[in-house]
Length: 433
Image (cartoon, rainbow, N blue to C red; front, side):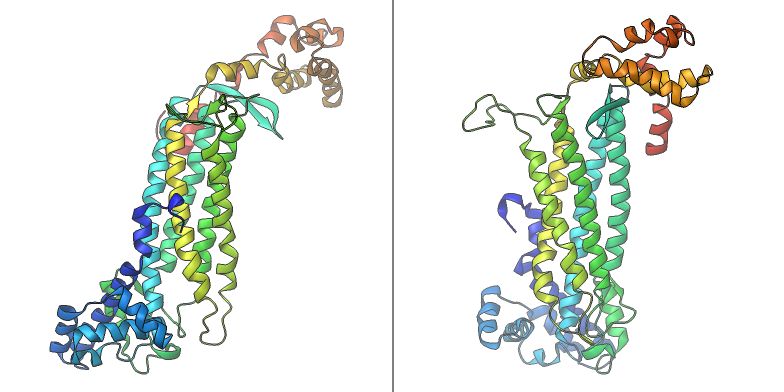
């Protein structure tokens, strides 16, 4: 976790203090369940809660000797609890603590990500309705195609991130399981009711069947979901970067008072935030493959997944959290230039209406192949700057034999392309517009 790209709310979930606190609560809740079954004295379970403390520096010190993090934690915990510490961790194995803790951390991380998503969706919806009828050119292959609206661009992103929110909710459910099943997962030395008790206390569901670990297909799906969301972040970031290019300049990242764009060129206003998001998206995506490779472990467990997860779990969630918050801020303050959009619409001298002319000719009885030829032979000179497309069509006798001047002029109406915007908005936002 790099402080530059880390929000404190998310970082706190992955701090050693938070991790060991979760470990303690897992152990203490397990003691409560053991006491209810009469396996350990109730007074011992109470003493664990009352005296249970730990010190991160002391745990690290012990681990340097014993080379085992859970044993180091339990040793330090025992130093505070006293004789009753012998009842802690009864029938449990290290993975019971580690995997259940990871589940809790991922769930808490996801709750923050869902809030991030809600904030982003709110910003996208506001800008979509603000520019619902702001006409701009749509591009395919980066080339002018036909008119659309900037509101539709924002509505598309809203729909995509709405799907991502549902994926995130499903990913949360996927990893929210608890395993306290003991060595190789048979419950031989720990009653299944103890797992159920801890799961309920910690807001999880019991893992239906574990080995010595929770199956890693769950985690693979979780990190794959984060990767998909990161890709959506990049898609919108790239769109903004293209729209901010000098030759386009239809939208622009907010440039604050006193901000500097270049150490060499004082005039520069660079899309640094969206470029940053493109880079961060690459990082989040890169963590999906190791998560999938963690699925295939030896027999009932090995620890080849452990070093991977200690890195990707905090890094992926922290990075995506930062990215979503940054993107919401970009959208909220995005500068929109309708006049530039209008200039770009007119840039090709009306060529953006070529399909309407093509279709009108076919409706007038011309074969599609011949109609295409008639339109293209007038379009290509206009493309090269040799006259206006509409003027060329008006002077083409073959076109004039099929379409009147008034009919041709009517085909160049921009409003034609926005007649279904309300319907699309209703599909996306589910409300009368």
